[in-house]
Image (cartoon, rainbow, N blue to C red; front, side, top):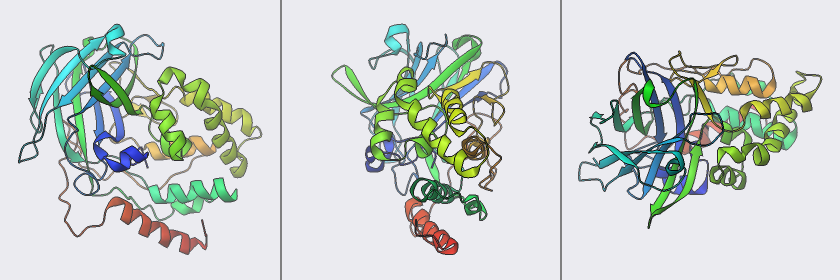
Amino acid sequence: MSHHLDTPAAREDGRVDLCDLYVFDGADPDTTVLIMTVNPDAGKSSPTTFHPEVVYEFKIDTNKDDMEDLSYRFRFGEPDESLEQPFTVLRAEGEDARSGTDGEQLAQGRTNEQILLTEQGRVWAGPRSDAFYADGVAALVFQQAALTQHTYLPNVFEQGFNVFEGRNVTSIVLELPISALGQGVIGVWATTSLHGHGRSVQIERIGLPLIQPFFNIDDERSEAHNRRQPREDRGSGRPRVAEIVTLFTRLAGTTESPEAYGQAVADLLLPDILHYRLGTSASFSFATRNGRRLTDDVTDVVLSLLVNSPLSDHVGYDGGIQPQFPYMAAPHIVTADEPTVLARAQAQAQALMQSLGQGI
């Protein structure tokens, strides 16, 4: 769920796997916070470090043309014996933001330390508690029942099993003055790209939550989505989003015009960019999609949007975020005998399907 383990490349190396993106107003006045997370199930299924040959980027559209005008780039060195890494923060603007791996250097530092930027602002990078929460197992069963059996099973969410509880990710937390990002509404997405010989190849991207697991379910579609640019989404991704939403609303019987509703949701969700009005209180809800806070219940929002009716997975935020920078909770201690997230999910899925009498 979320974008955890969504492609073969991601399952092979969690350091390139973008899990979640958050954009919200900072605790300090007149600041905006951007967070990306990688390494799902860090310390178990994935490493806790960043890839030295990958550029991690926040892409920012400041003029609503679905193209990046700013890029904040992070490049990491090899980890030492304590798994800490040196890293550099770069900022590129205009055409330079859309390609390449360089930019104006804003800071150098090491992971697990707060680093101040030369243009104001600060950054932190390292392992933290995974802020994403959802009954990812029930969501998968719910989805497969609709896609393979044309069956609507909202009761799968009754148990409220958070498959990500007690697990970690690796995060980059960037806090900037609003003045560094422009004014009005910005569009944000994050990317991971392999770099070398002056060029980079995009591996993954993320904007809105849950686009991949609900609308790009198979590896082929997921990889195609990751390779595209947001400005290409309406042409390439819109038919699939509309098709999925049409199917669910028809099965749920929540609208007289499933096709029209599907088209409307596709227009709402694409391009896959997280929009945020600078200087306002962020909230990703059914009524207001304005940035995304660490506590926002995005699974309930997307499920309700998918079926055109209130629907919850009955999993809530379990607390732990910090009121101040770097905001994300400290990492959990995960013991060697605990199963991986995938093993935990597989066991729960089998139990859930048996309880439902389903052979999905």
